Length: 541
Image 1: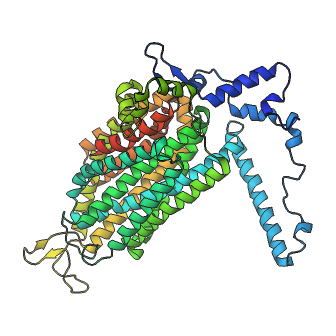
Image 2 (image 1 turned 30 degrees about the horizontal axis):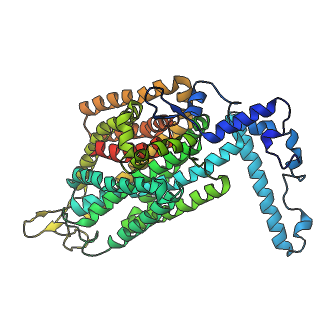
Image 3 (image 1 turned 45 degrees about the horizontal axis):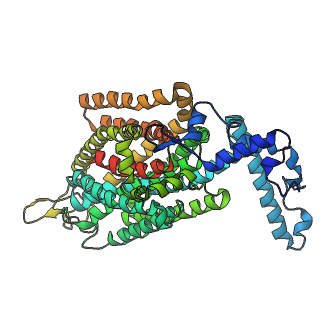
């Protein structure tokens, strides 16, 4: 009988009523109702209570901990958790294979014990082991995603510069705004309940699309006319624009989708202890991506590196599928209040769509504040970033000039125009050096960001608080911009961009994502998509 009853009803006595009330509150996922207008609030009441220190037994973990060692001992299997297979279990196998299986099992549990020991020494009891494993599995998706993105990002400017010229970069940023606008429309349409797609399925849809897109670009880059073998810079070469806008839209859509998914599956308490680890894991990927380009860009070539990035798009689908199978997904159940409101006002149900994010942005000042934190500082960062690329292009064009004839082979260079008797593009060595430089920039930036996020993000937030941490990045921006204005050299601008990017990834982005915790699902997905995808892209343009 005890096993057929819900766990919250096995306690008996006066606690039954409290458990039922607690269960009803958690399953309803209620929202605040504004007393004046009667409209649904964008804030989640449970998360607001948690921020204010009002909690129901702290969170769901405490409820689970109460069950451990209590009346649920019947559910616990009587087995040795440190050993799944015994020697007699593999007796029927050939002796070498059986020994190998037992050896692998011993290595697994030994590694697990060491990992748990290190975890306890670092985090103590503030970060439960099960939550840590859940965080690391989800972080693997961000690891592959960011690794593939930074690998392609290291190639993005080099490909556009080689095909269309460095002067095309500002125009490409403006074009990417309109491309991303179309992607946002599709993204918000798929978010609607009418589309029939669950949130995790969007990773499969967009991952497949970008995987085939980047694989096609990698194939075309080897084409003798429209690819890299043709070294004449011409803004009419479409492949450079497609490559640039494809990478920009991927970085906007997929990263926004991941953090929206994380915000929906982690509460505020879990986010504070998990997001720093997620960012640190992602930074490892962002280090390995540029490192791959820096190490193998010369030998393998840009098209092969592009194909590796396309493979990352396919791999992230596998990691997300693994997370869903292991831990499931927190679904946003329809609220009874919402159903009543839709019956009373049928037109309100038609508001949902691609413009609902804009409607939420216009209506709520809190969402406008998130927009300001997300987008306004990108203007300064983009100006410094473009300055660095122009200085780098000029530096490598002087170091590896384009000449009428190659001094080593004696053949005519494809970057030289015999009719005008002038260079029309970068030499092959200059393109490779520019690509290596961008790869090194990614290594340095993400290496610093990894150190900050792994050792500093959680500590800074705990010490300064969320409000002061949000003010820290604008202060760093001001100091860096003044320094660049006084000393506009390549080395100074490189160091400035490294500091800005690292602090943006390690400090500004995690604290910005925490601001979405007390909001509704529509704000976390639809308003956030417009802010992250269109707003941030527009500020860069």
